[in-house]
Image 1 (spheres, rainbow, N blue to C red):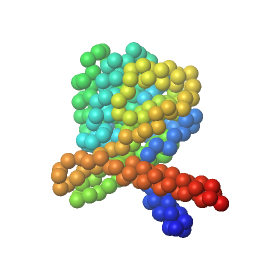
Image 2: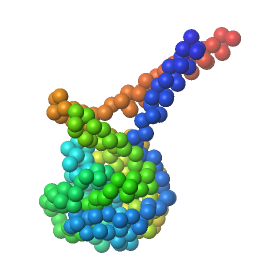
Image 3: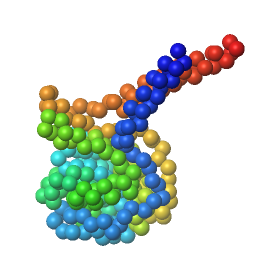
Image 4: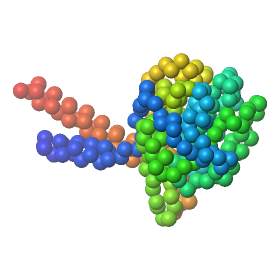
Length: 252
């Protein structure tokens, strides 16, 4: 009985541990500012040049994603519209594509789509949309602890990835993570002000949202629940195992 329970726990843990999609936070570490990207205007530019010594909001998405990325970026645009800080003067925004096949044209189209939703005066250079090759993409995602997984199903390519924002100081230091796809203007403002002072803050909300994956049969995007279900089963079995162990000790 005991061996059977231990075997179940190990099997669940191993299958769950193989899924490394998620956010592995690296507060206090500095991103590689020398990395070169191509912006939405087809110009080569480094992260240092984009940040321009300002606190920066970083998101990692891909421009043809119709799952989590689109609502996340639209939510960010909505929050920026309400943010009580001056665009370009007080902060910058960077969206990096994790898809190496995304082009500057794709980046510009996504930028124009989002800027149309911002009603207040907003300097376009505030928000940069960057593309690059796989090596450079890997460098930036690894530096911030952003783990994602490319999937090819029925000839359709998509990505399983977390949804969140990463706050970067003017010197390129990671100061905070904001999980989810909806952000309060106050929370974002506070995070940017903290980044200006290079104050490192822990992430309070640990719940991450993950990208939807394309289902070719239904032609819709479906949520990838394996991670949630796996962790729930593991927790239930672990609790049951502890209960049995304690019960056995009391009888002894």
